[in-house]
Image (cartoon, rainbow, N blue to C red; front, top):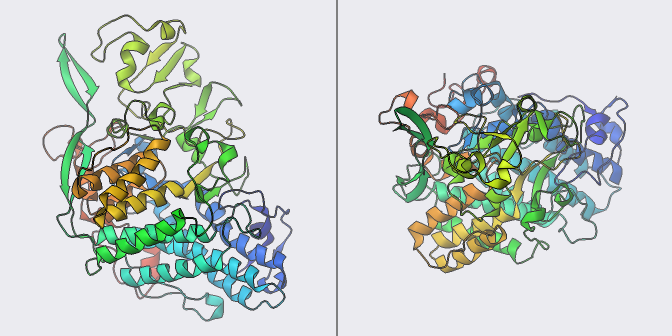
Length: 590
């Protein structure tokens, strides 16, 4: 674990970090490296400490592209070119450089949180409420970092203090339940220490009391689902991406509808002794407190506004990380990965990027009129090399008849006049070029830069609502669960659930709704893990009969075959070698 030995005004003022926006953060030019004791005892110093902690997300984690890859690429509904998904996408996590950042990044943030808290508690010239709010923000960041770590690695070392105040630099791994107890305490304290969103002292772009309460509901639901009895049933829509059919003497590949497969929950290591019903009761309690406005007013954004850059300060985004346009340090490649950047600003032609997308199995989950695919998926796009021959990609394959004037089997039919009039040569293929690419990250200031001002949503109010629905269903209150499930569906013009299918069936509906709502937001792997269905869901992507690797490939040919070792990420080998208390890696990793 890397321990920082100095604090720079570059980290404390320049970056624009963010819980939701950059508007209220200091934007000073970097001047020199300074010692912590030189920051002083003032509100400005408090702000610098807090901003310095937030800076870890951008410069330390997102800047080089490891995030969100470490959260996102190992999932059943996510695909892209094999060179980008790499070892993460193929399940061979050992030696994956990005995963080193998954360990080191949160621990660097935790170290800075601990040091900042020590200095803030020694201040005497600043209003107590202002100090408490700042410490609450540190608690939230620290809790979120441990939430990432415990889900990815299982037992991990816990650090109460910073090394400059006597903390050991190497410690043994703390059991999962104890890590969660620390997370719960941190978030509980933060929810009472931070300002509410509607408090006049609350600063736009920071986390708030409601952020802590909302995350706490998610933490309790994560523990509760992991502790559900072995054998609990969950239906997942899955199967191989396509089938090969013979037509007019030729083999033709066509995408097929996913099939509903009943999966049986397996034990999630470390959660066996927990009481799922008690934990779901707490998840429901905290989620409802947020919904009822106890921590300020939160609401779902209209879908037409949800992913607009002008909406990034909306209450729906309870915790998000945003970068500056074209900044050399505090930047992300989220726009490049998911949307792609143009040859020039406003051009219709992509220069590069737009690689990560969702699979046909995911796209087929939706009703035809659902905004999350009518507006939330890119249907037509052009790369620079297509200008020469007037080419244009389209999605989904089922549109081929109206768009191309050909059936999916290749027979010529009358093309829809709307598309015929464009004169474009429409293309579709079964590869990483044609996936269900999200539009969530399209709206940026400059769409012709590799480092646009994107925002990554770690926690949205929609998540709190669906956590409440999940908890109420598991507590036996399915009618209440349906009411809140439909709130999310109504926003997206999806078909509302009118009849109660029963607890087991509704469980699967809610998990599927999460897959639809939070696609390309780094949540899917962790939902599969907490429900104990990760291995079965991944290994159900079978193109042909048999268990050979060639038969477990997704839409773009990425290997989805997984084994027990994939349930946890391997601890970086450098950490295992340096920490005398960690004598072996996670199971299956040398």
